[in-house]
Each structure stands twice: as structure tokens, then as C-alpha cells.
Length: 156
Image 1 (cartoon, helix red, strand yellow):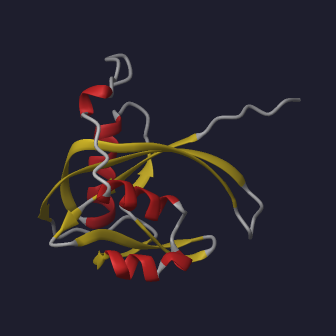
Image 2 (cartoon, rainbow, N blue to C red; image 1 turned 135 degrees about the horizontal axis):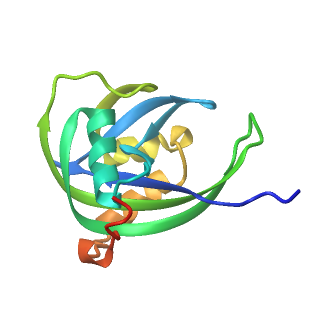
């Protein structure tokens, strides 16, 4: 019997305010890790809807995506479980809005604003190498218009 391969599609929000980035501290199978607000694309939503939802669920902040920073293909093999997963990540930047008084998503310990140096010093606990790659691409000014993304109405 053959195995069907399919990558996990994820989104991430790269949000900067006053030279600090909105990050989350989360529990994972490998322990506590640092990540951007990020997560999986759910059925019947666009990539933009997914990043808005994930940012709200993980940080309690409203988020309006304004540009695509990049798309990233990566493979991750868990050192503890041996699980082999390929991720296709879409990283967005945009405007952060109101913070709501609401519980954070399961597994999210807290959201926090971190300087680039603090993020760099915590590299050993990043959720993946894409955490720093996406921030570096953001700081390099990489931006693509959201008009590059198309969601067929049958998906929604």
C-alpha cells in the first residue's frame, strides 16, 4: 500500500510595532518553543482568513494582512517522535489592531513583543528555522501584493 504525500499548509503573521515583533510561546512535543502567530489552513477559508484567525486565536489581537512576505517549503523530522512532515508556509505582514480580552488557543502559553535581538538569542527554542527566515525576509523588505493570491469561490 502506498502512502499519499501531502504537505501541511500553514500561515504565519509577521507583525512589527515599535521595532518589536509579536511572538507566541507555545507548548510542543519538543517542549516550549517560540513562534510567530501561525497555524494550519482550515477547510473553507482563504489564506488571508486563516492568518487573521490564527493571529486572533494565538495572540487575541486583530490582524489585517497587507502583503505576502513569502512562501516557504520546509521539511521537519521530530527528534522525539520521528514524525516527518513537509510544511508549505505562507507568511504575511500587515496591521495589528485591537487586543481582546479572551483566552488564547490551546497550547499557547502567552503572546509577547520581542526585539530582533531577543528573537535571535532565543533561536535555540524557535519552533522552526522559518521563524527567523520570515523575520529576516520582512526586514529585507520582501513584499508581494495580496492580489497574487486567488481563492476560487468554490473553496469558501
